[in-house]
Length: 78
Length: 292
Picture 1: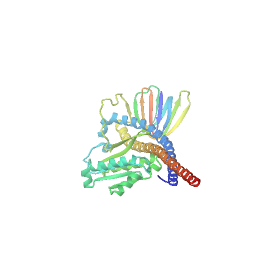
Picture 2: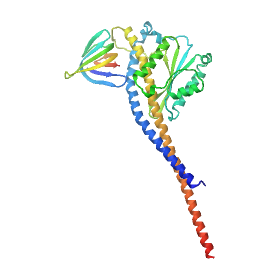
Picture 3: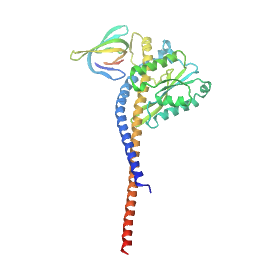
Picture 4: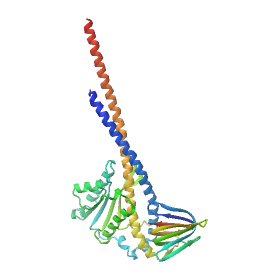
């Protein structure tokens, strides 16, 4: 699935990933391929992503919003 | 006929002015590039946030954040005037000021006469003008453009939101220049608070989203965030416009200086020619006189 993380200042990440782990406001959750449409709010924490090759990357966020639609994940981070 | 020395000093002074204006143009151009990148980067973010909010706005009334959306009787009005800290950027600041003055004296005339209109000046140029002409400047922020980042803009946005929530003001408008491209700025007056109801074009969010944890909580998070982003966008827009306007103004000034130089050179050469002709005339007539 395609992931895009943008902040007010810049675009932090764009690319294909197989897993996203997010700090949801009520606890951490994961998004895999073919997830149902979702809108949720994030709190301060770490976003973990795993790309096609299985490599993991981490991003710190101060909260944000996430939208999942048709295998496109958009994170408006802060 | 102007005398030679006079013209020469004028040519020198125009030349050095031209050097300054062309240097300022280059500086503005490089600053513009940076500012432009920032605003273009923010726009998709702001737009997406707006879309989320509009899709969910039907439920907006039921939440705590409804205070930002509720229209109440308009008594106290705050106008946020976004200008630049520095001049030499053409009509950039003058336009904003003119618009603000027009707004005060037409739309908000009654409120102004009651003394219920206040101004919040961001940028030195606006603050100077309104203080000098004794408009009711409630607050001013001159430091924002010296160090423009999200955190600094956030403080002001939060201040505005708090004032509105505490009913210090019933309506907050922002006047600023929106950045179109380097040569074009669009002067805009936008209502910041209360939030305008979305234009219902029937599109909305047609997908059946899962809301996690629930719709209300998301709206509560989104509304203040979207307002802050909106404000940040205004400031960035104005910043990019300022540099765009300055670049255009300096470009014109440089062009005008070259035009002026051309004219001056012409009259310099004419004066030189005349003086040579005079000299020759004197010598020739002197020689003629000796011959006889």
